[in-house]
Image (cartoon, rainbow, N blue to C red; front, side, top):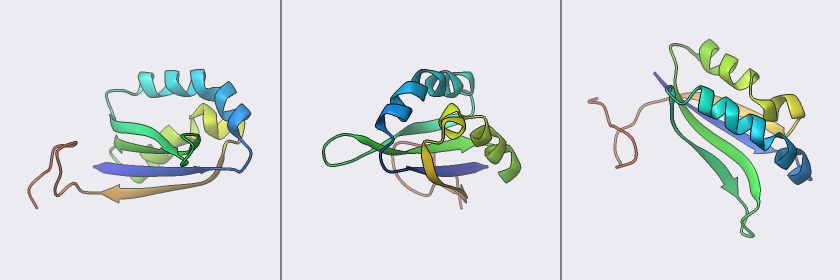
Amino acid sequence: MLYVITAIDRPGQPETRAGARPDHLAHIAENAGSIRIAGAFLTEKDEPSGSMIVIEADSLADAEGFMAKDPYVAAGVFESITIRRWRVVAGTGLEAKAL
């Protein structure tokens, strides 16, 4: 199953985010086999303002567990995190499965 993780930064977090980024990227790399796509939301000034990750997981609990181990979470970067089950139906970036 695919899950979309949407995490929005707390205001005023650029230094905290930057400090945790190397560990966050290591966490992403360690789980690369499960991650379909990941990246940062950007402001109009190209400053990070959150993250989006599409992860393949067996359950919502597994997706939550992945996110709980993210160094950005431990550092308090995010104001909110939403995890939703998701199905691809169109596009070229991810493999679409039959409905």
